[in-house]
Amino acid sequence: MSVGIQTALVTLSPLLSDIITRAIRPEIELDVVAELHSGDLLKEQLRLIGPELILIGLQAGQTDAIAATALAAVPTAKVIAFSSDCRHAYLHEMRPYQIMLIDVTPAALAGAILGQQLGAQA
Image (cartoon, rainbow, N blue to C red; front, side, top):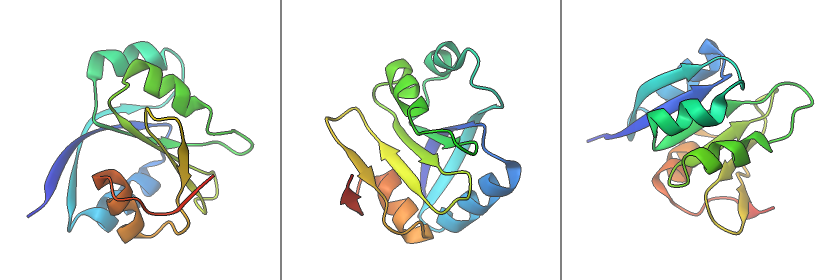
């Protein structure tokens, strides 16, 4: 049985979105409630939507600091930012620490979304 999670996609390519959705589908069903293609007005848009999960595609050279903006808008959400080469993902929650996901596998992503402590503290 899969768990449905209200999800907002921020500057995430359709290809990466499809890969993530399919990879975690056996355990988690992403209910995409918004696709935001720009960081402009991000805080306001996320506040109105109120998703449980925010997936962010970082551009080359961009840090994962955008996650702080997302969390300021929706403090109860989990935010996962994917590096531009998709080799790294960063889980942010409204806690005093950040967790770097060691392996960006379907099991690791599903665990991060469901709250399992995977990875090492950064």
